[in-house]
Length: 458
Image 1 (cartoon, one colour):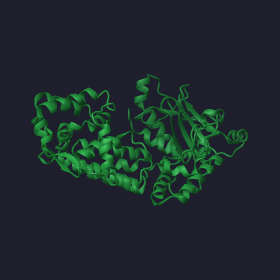
Image 2 (cartoon, rainbow, N blue to C red):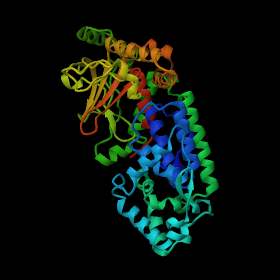
Image 3 (cartoon, rainbow, N blue to C red):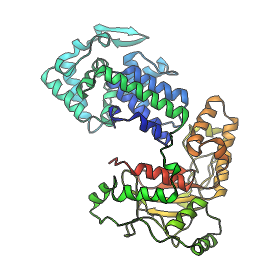
Image 4 (cartoon, rainbow, N blue to C red):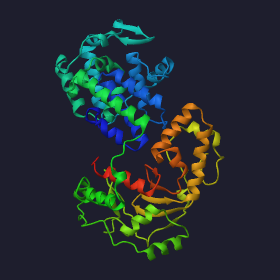
């Protein structure tokens, strides 16, 4: 999604903190290649001040080193030595931007051959700024595609037509192109003025700052009853954004996702069979509908913006799951690994790396579709994981406490609510791109999923 198309208000609504942080870095990269390098720097500074919960930004942070080198600007905490070293490692590499690689290279070569001296090339026109060679041309006026030769103009327009994050990744590390980026060539190519770009940057900067420092804004789903939540999810899936899925597969659209309610006797029998008292929000769900999904044997549940999540089981199918493959760390949320280091246990037979958190050993499976599983996580495991996080919070330094409090706030609402947690909920994805998302409750999972179901992100 282009920065130009991002609604600042939506950023404030995003519940997933890693999504916010990754989005910020991607938009910083976009502003940089569009020539608004100060906005890019300010965005990264917002995250540095708030404290990032994740370590890996898909290499975007490293590719931005070329932008910092070309501009002479530095986010807080970034040294010249790091910029020089990482920018050199990135120099001349396009491996992250395929299949855009040929187009980026072609634009690079065409501009270098036809307009190099006009954009601050060759090296005789370079000056030193903050110890980094910077093209003097970045202080000149704006550059438009109409200033270029016919071949370069055509290539710049093709870059704009194929504008996406992978294209931006390739542009970031095309070092010879930065004199043109700094003069706004690509901003002109995609059709945005310098003033409009700066204004958009200011609004996004405020939105990311609000989101990172104050948490997400409630979207209204919190006040809905369980039945209302399910009705919204069903409508979005069968008649809203989820129609895309049914059109793509050619499957018949179900009339409803609801089934007859589970009786009190059925719910009691389930708890007896599992030998545990189930969480109230899940039992409330069962009293409304005994299972929720397509009911056509395809296990389709609520649309998640890309495809359906798993159908939720009827009481007859709900069961304990304790197979060896589930034995991964019970990580409620992402945090920098160094916060875990003092509390890590030694590697064991079930896991090939050390971790501070307990391993999933026994969960209640309540849904399954293809490579996706839905689990209720019982109190014993929740208490163990919760205790580890609270220990990290108690013993961390000022920045570590800030990072943990932000992560806990987004997960449970507050430290106080986090301490009260009994059950959690997991969506686990296996296969070539394994992923685990943990929620503070069954209802929290539904709210997050139903929020996503309103938008087609294919």
